[in-house]
Each structure stands twice: as structure tokens, then as C-alpha cells.
Amino acid sequence: TLQLARTSQAEALDLSAQLLADASIQKRNLFIFGCNHAGLLAKEMYYRTGGMVNINPITAPGLNLDIVPVTMTSQMERLSDYGTIIIDSSPLSKGDVIIIHSVSGRNTVTIDAALRAKEIGAKVIALTNLETSRTVASRHRCGKNLYEIADIVIDNCGCKGDASIQLEGITPKVGPTSTVIGAALLNAIAVEAVSRILAAGHEAPVFLSANL
Image 1: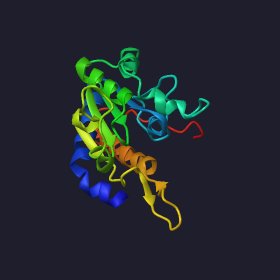
Image 2: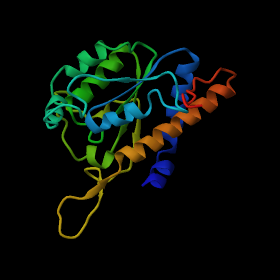
Image 3: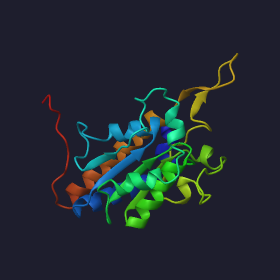
Image 4: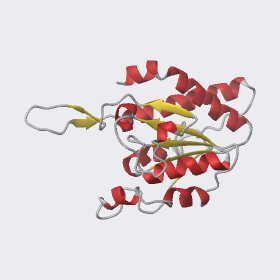
């Protein structure tokens, strides 16, 4: 799956790296947002050894996996207008870049966030699973899924529903791929963005490990 994503998404990865590099050179901010497990990649890219200093997560109550019962998170990400409130409560502004991660790309908060970010004038990079998203209906009143809104779409090339391995004797598949593949793709984009920032003669915004 990783090899497929690397090769089939080469153009989108290239465009994303350039977008991050250009925004960094122009002293714009970079953001990343996701609900529930999709939000794990927001944590991966933030305050990370070897990562870009100017990537910031956008978080909000009820969308992390630290609430009980955890099933509330699935209901919270379907709330109308919450995504708009989240973006309006963040420092995202015109010229910034936001990466939005959602496997299905169908839920209301995610789509509200993408639509509001574009209204503000930010560029939206979607990391999603097209095999899933193209076969599920949007839960947003606009009728669109995330990949139909974003400026750049990166397909994680996962299986429908994310899980990848079918074992005999059980109906659901096991082995989700979105987190590991997504982390590899986003870190690759960051590496290339830093390379381009340096090539343009600018200082690279990279974290050094606190243990070094």
C-alpha cells in the first residue's frame, strides 16, 4: 500500500510539498486537523523531532479519543456548524495552509472545516481514502465529500473502510492502514518542503530533539 501511495500520489505529494514550502517562505502558518483517529496525524506532525516548527494542530473538545464513552466522538463529528466554529476559533488566516485528514471525508465537521478554511482564503490539502469516500454519501448539507472541496487531494490508497486483511472466520477486516501510511506520506511531504525551503536560500523551520 505504501509503495502504491508513493507512486500513484507523486504529483499530489509534489504539489503539497511546494505549497508548504511557499507558505513557509512567505511566513504563513501551516495547520493540520482531523477527527478521532484521523487526528492522530495532527499530533504526529506537531512539535515533532525532525518535523516542521510551523505546523500546528487544530483541536476541539469531543473530537479526540480521550472522552468516555468514546462513541461520543462519532456523534460529535457529525454536528452541523461545529467545524466552522473550530476554524473561526483558530488563528488560520488567508494565505495559510491546512491539511485535513479524514478517511471517509463524509462527516459534517470535517467538511465544514474545509469549506470555512477556503472561505477565509487558506489552501486545503485533503488526505483521504478515495476508495471509501467515492462510495459513501456526504453527511453535509452541501452534498460533497472532502475530496470534492480540497485544493489538493492525497489518496492514502487504503481499502474501503480502512482495514486491510480479511481473516477466515470473521466478517470485519483487521489491520487499518490510514495512520501508518498517512504518517509516512505527510512526513515525506515535510522533508521535501524543507529541502525546497533550503534550496530557495531560506532557514529551515525544523525541530531538534530535546534529548540532543
